[in-house]
Length: 501
Image 1: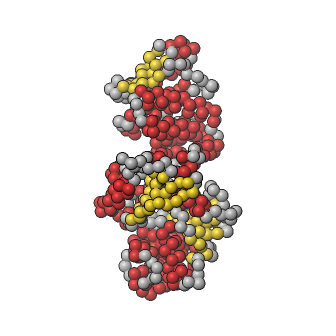
Image 2: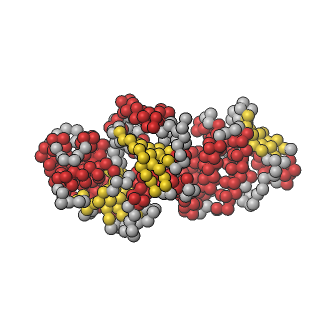
Image 3: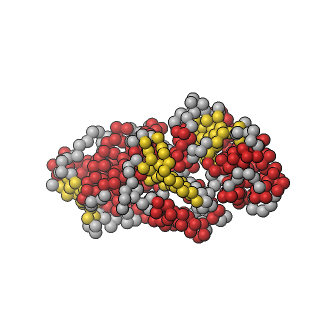
């Protein structure tokens, strides 16, 4: 199989309306698009009232992903990032769909939170449209959600995501002939949602409003064709478009110039949401940029490859926010990675997979005590809850869930992890490595493990910790703790034995 040059990267954006694949060359931070694919999957249209995805919508998605997967042959995992947005967040049967989707595509799918989506959108905009000191309000109307971002630097100051989308609003309000009452109801419903964030957005203020993605571009294109004197989106211009739709009874019958056929079904929903944003936030005019989520994914991916990982910044910020002892966190992180490396080497875990888990353990160790800021009793449960539910820029939902599982499992009864982990050996390795690290570092003092310390796993026999007997005599509290830890693992199918040598 032909491999791709290291500077060739791919992003896959699994939106609620369309799926997009884009391939770029990275030339010292300058991106050159060399290939792109887009398919209007209308994924959100497959959701019923109970938020269950239909078989038909799943089939459309799988067929598209299989085509994308064929184009991604030869790419290494570190060259590809796949992000999924609102429909993947809300669909109740998405857990059953994702394995099939990943198999078709050939790469893991990161379901990202709304605010993470907003951050990535802003990252794409700020790299392609530098604000030059101006405060920007960026609005991205997707198929199932709308992101609102304010910022003037590389990192935004405000990120919000609301459940407003061109697909969901078109389905909700514009299934039949469109009348004035329908349009007013759609705009009012959207304004009610936007009202939740309007005060803080207005207080932050902005100098420039920027629209991104399909709805904003289609509104701009139609306005430019119908009213050439207007280069930007304005509320008056959008009202004229709405009146024309209402007079005609549908978007199709309005026969707008420069409205792509693929946008006809969802145009009214996007227009209503944009009008609501203008009215509720008091926006005067908006320019439109070609930058979008996929561009932000590329720049984020470049940052990860340059060791400028947003996730590292987030971990540092969480440590500061929750008053974590960074010295203790570092001790636990370093010790946990030693144990994890020992397990991975013994079982010949592929280097890339081992490095991924060592990185996850590092973050989990650095954040395992954030719950102490809430209460010391059961702090690991508080820590896990925060990691599962907080907005963590740079992290996918799957990564956050894994961190939460690691932190939840780092202390307490091991039986609680049986249902969570099941037969996932590598996750058991990570949990045990973090548990032992917390145990060995409990004195919160500098600690050097004795030479020849090894942690091994044999299928069907469990774990064996090989460690100096003399060293344990000098550390009786750790020796006692190891005995108790062994008793905890006796409850599982993979017991832990301490071999004193």
